Amino acid sequence: MSEFGLIEHIARLFVDIDHRGWETIGDDCTLLPIGGDEALVVTTDMLVEDVHFVREATSAEELGRKALAVNLSDVAAMGLPAVATLLSVALPSNAGEEWAREFIKGYHTLSKEQGVALVGGDTTASKDKIVINVVAVGRGPLSNVKRRSAAKIGDAIYVGGQLGASALGLKDILAGEYDTPNAARHRLPVAQSQEGVWLGGRAEVHAMMDLSDGLASDLCHILHASHCAAEIFVENIPAVEGDVESAVCGGEDYKLLFTVDADNTECFESDFEAQFGFRPYLIGQIVESAKSEIIWTEQGRRVNPQWHGFTHF
Image (cartoon, rainbow, N blue to C red; front, side, top):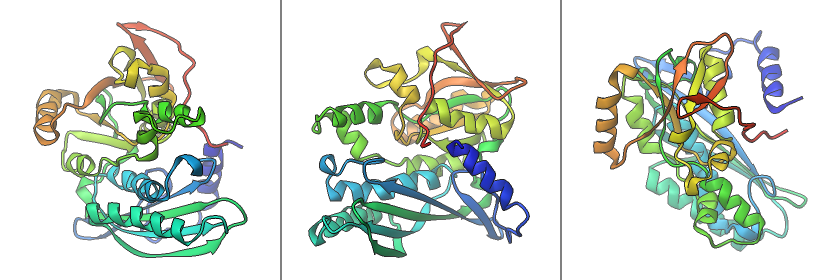
């Protein structure tokens, strides 16, 4: 069973249980309206040693920041600010007290920068690998929430930054080159929290999510949820070092992927630049199709690259 096949199986299995106001599986976070125009969003993510990080190439302090950042990214993708987290860690005996203190130092530093409280969690022992799980909670206006299912035919598709640095950094790390700029970007992803909240307040922004498994995989989630297809302009993909395949297939960039009403793109891009100092990258458009697919074009001509994002199973 594939990763997403398992998720679909779980969703079907639990559909007959009362969700008591919580939304069903399908977005970066689940959501609970809490009255008025307020909502809570909740997400969780896990980091496993030798799957998501290599201990020899990543300091404990860096890992503390990364564990939090990847969860803050999911909350940002919903268009709301994060307000609290819960942290659980399983540590083997060879990750001692000093390692744990440095890990918490990194987690605390980013928590303080973002104004996000740590309000609970759990600790336990592990046989030989470090396992980290974070739950992040966001809170804000229900009307600002962005869902994967909200893309509309004709929407412009944007990404919030350059893609591929993390994938290139992982290649460096696996080759024993730990000190390259891309390796640093892989170890220390940055959640686009401010951008996510700002985008949440823009009515012309329709669907949104973050890029954790690569554009070739993650965009498909929006397309399936919104029952549409996408044309992606290969020449417009903001690939680090010109490596388009890494930009499309590599994971853990944590840039925001979002769609915008095509009639408002000029004003939107100008306002975004005024707010953040750079323009978002226009990479394609939502199109009508009988199936949810990515149509890759280059200089107006269709191409058929064998690009696939990261899958866990």
